[in-house]
Image 1: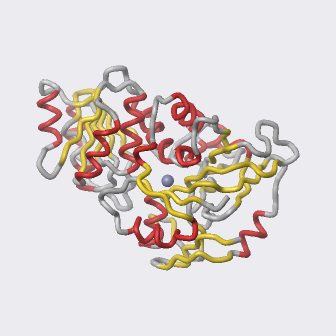
Image 2: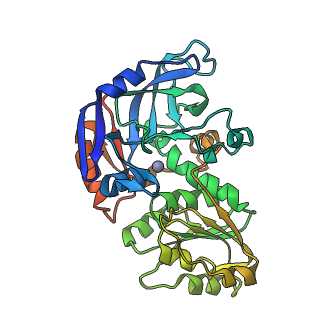
Length: 350
Ligand SMILES: [Zn+2]
């Protein structure tokens, strides 16, 4: 089937991919076949395109990109009970080994055997159909659009980060980074009970979008403002209860404890391909709790429920939509990191 294929670093084509047709023919008893509708472009897709690797994951053979997806069930396996043909769904892209120790302990996202879309050597889903386990496919309420549903995957990262932070009602949070993950984290922190969330970035347009999401979001322009100064000023010198690091920049990560209050929590979200320096002394004098997250676990149904209830609105984050035929151009634009865009999505022909 026609797929968006990363041939190798800097080389992306829209072409037939016969190997995936053979794989996709196999529908297990607990699988569903899904016709794709909308697929979001993730920073990781772009990173594989521009760098050919993320840490230990190296693109050594042509790989189909894409892992943020929604679609419609077109066929169900013989043992499927919760989904029917015609159901609108979104899909969790990481499928662990159901018998692994990590999965049995409930931490299936850190199962070393997890198979995650568009992480080599596993293919992604920028293609017309896919086969996926029922257990990782979630039915959408009528009032959640395909575009919103394709945002559930990045939103899940924010909700997982907010869960790990153990937010208490009225907490003050700082999110460093106003990219898609920073913004879904800000929305998740508010939904989790934060009274105010400060969002820090360099890009003015991204900060404008951040501020437009909620009256409880305060942008910090790090070109002219200093994060710890703003937070200390607004908290009588105490500091923020939670700091979310959502840039993956070693420089930003080095300063995460400065705006943090005594006893506060830092959640590291941004990926760090290389070792970074860590201000252990600043963490120590605060008795800071530090949480790390890897993707997410158990949060897709919660994300869908919050989109449906209106507790979280991701629509302002979707800044451009491309037709599948224009996917190569969409990736070229995404790779140029346009400062006014948050999430670019691709719609497949229906
Ligand atoms: Zn993603």
